[in-house]
Amino acid sequence: MFRNPSYLLWLLPALGAAAGALWWASLRRRALTEAMGDPATILRLVPEEAVGRRRVKAALQAAGLFFVIIALAGPQWGVELVGTQTAARHVVIALDLSLSMLTEDVKPSRLEKAKAELSLLLEQLRGNRVGIVAFAGEAAVFCPITMDVDAAKQVLQTMRVDALPRPGTSIARAIDMASSALERYPGGKAIVLLTDGEDTVDGPARVVESAKRAGTAGIQLFPIGIGTPEGEPIPLKGPDGAVSGYKKDRSGNTVVSRLGEKALTEAALATGGAYYRSSVGETESAEIVSKISSLDRAEATLGLSQRYKNKFMIPLSLAFLLLLAELLIPETSPRTQGREGISYNDGRKMERQGALLS
Image (tube, rainbow, N blue to C red):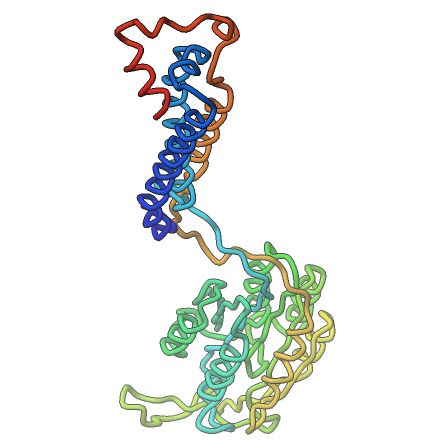
């Protein structure tokens, strides 16, 4: 296999041109010999081995030219794994999948609103590395950090409130898991948190504590509050999507889920980030992406790919050695420079004369 096979088209023309040049040089040599005097007399002054050495040197030149053209064609064989590098920022988007996200104080529901925000964020973050963490009473990585935004958007379609087995809401654990995924990467790092802000598992103090640890690791937090401070009851829906009732507490009272902004604001400030409340126009997404874009990029490996190994140095080295050998071979040796030629009554004279002049 060759990287630039078009160079092989020059192989025969180049060798033909070289042969033509040698033939032309032979004609010039013959003409020069005839101009200087009697060829038989001149023959007596030329060592016998000059003809053979001249042919060897010509063969070495042709072989060197052959391997130079092969090297230009770029021969390749064998496979190696190489990493593709790019400069990018690293972002993890954490999505709340707790039951309270079914509340419909924002239409069509908090969860659908959050998924729309997440989809928009992914689209605006193209060129950066993104990952997705989902959480309820526990947190899980749904999409590892990747440059493939389209793959991350496909994962988004599978996210439902029953995707995680443990009920409740643990924002602190979501921040911890997202931070753990980001810590090993250099450069700018951020967590975008889509939630209604109610941490029913660990409490607001633990949320701020987790955010401080993230800030120490150089990670900025950008929470987006989904819902309204007034809130609404949490609907319970059957398999057909129809509302069958509303969630109640242990005393039998209907639970009203409200947007908890205080802990989210404190957590964001602890990392140097900022808190945003979800809006109808979703302008907060563009503002968050703008802040993330100001972070430092860092080199990251997109993945490993197979590549043929370049072997042009092998024919190039052969060409160098052949041409070097051609330069080191003299047409005559010092020991024969003063030796007399044979008599032209010798029966082999005419054969040598014809070979010399060619």
